[in-house]
Length: 631
Image 1 (cartoon, helix red, strand yellow):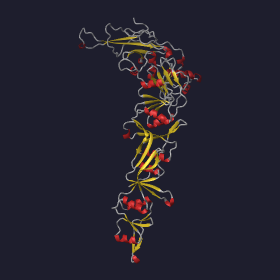
Image 2: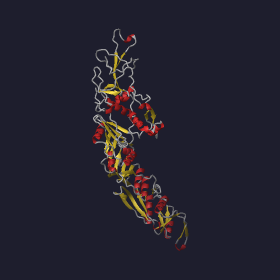
Image 3: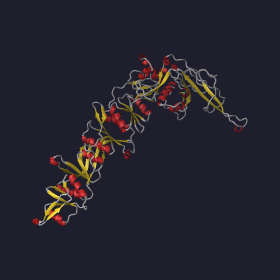
Image 4: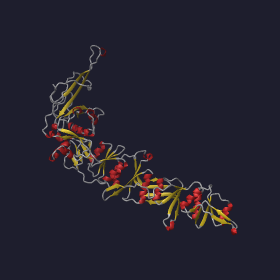
């Protein structure tokens, strides 16, 4: 006879094959059996159901539970608590052995929560639990009782001061606080005793017909007897042994639960998280996720679990799949940190308790980022450009993937003064304009905080200078360009009256350009003057400046410089500005020349280079007070 304390459900299906051709007369028809044992648990006035399950190869707890019902992280956390209570001998739920006997929550008999003891409410943006209770007419003196009940009913609510929009909560009604009624009888099921002989293959039947009434299942206790041919299964753990965070302080942030503990281990962090603002801003700027809301549940090999409030232990979720759990003040015990890292291969606990300034803290997190390359960029700085080369030493040079160089996703993390000088800001703007991501940050050791330094988007005072290039060909365009660059005034349309010796004749000449420099008057000849006219002009005290189209623009410009008495100096990789102590270097290769300003004012610095120049480079040198000319 089947014991009353045990409710075996034996469902017998006779598979009938229709049609005379399906089987010969006298053949035994195939028989298919399903046997499943269901236990009920009435601890705490609530009725829950558990089924026996034999672990198969490749099973995980998530897979087993998901076969019963769709899972979400919140639902899994709730089911995990039920599983631990029902299987106290399972030390590590993440390591199940094939053949292991388990009691798993029955997805088919979920707690309905529609018995009038609770009511559903979907949280809206801006809601607080106190406002919700007030809107439901709950007196303020009863709020404490209701808030405790909300945490009991909703495992996802670990902090009554923190709820999230879009989540559906179960709110207690007055019926929740009345004495719990005896559990309702278990659902009726069919029962049949399988025939003697070898146990047939177990196959889940499609449907069963009406079933006779059977006695209700007993509470899940250590007195549940094993079924025939089964080993005894671990019974449910008393509710009193389930560990939950004690309400000792709203700041409690780490709870480690375990069956070997008489009380949970609670770590209460101090009130400060040094450099938290800088770290969150920096990794968000890199493009990673900084998660500091909610609760993280991490089952441990010891059989317990670490419950972490992300407000105190934020997580950096890197694009490659690695996650860094930030422990600002050493609140996670070393053995728990080691267990977490061993159990969760993608999760790394980063302790910053004994870290130095901002740089040390950033470095520790970057070590576990999983990036393709994180290199020191002080001794081997990134250099941009050739003719005008800009060296930008940075604390770290980051390639997030193997394709970062090709895709332009190179990131520099550079420490800078709180108020960078104008030239450093010009270099940072230059880097951004040429496609290099530089994240400058400042460190304030006294405040134990830092911040990202903003680089203004506006261009230099006069905007990006226009491109200046000596014309390739000669003629008047080359003359006009040179005169303008050198600041020499030119006249057009002048009529010169010149004559021979003794005023034997008068000649009127209209030169294309006329200019005066170095105490001489020059008449520009583009090849249209005859030798006789050129000779007369020279005799009249004018110098003829040939500018035919057969001469190159560079040659004409050099002769104009000579006429104006302007010298140039060829320099290679000349340090224009910056240096080791400045945190940057700007070097230029080209011909340098200096021009005096009008009326003794500030002079002009010009550099002649032999190749095309990027607009960002023109803007950079413009910020440095240097004009750059291609020739």
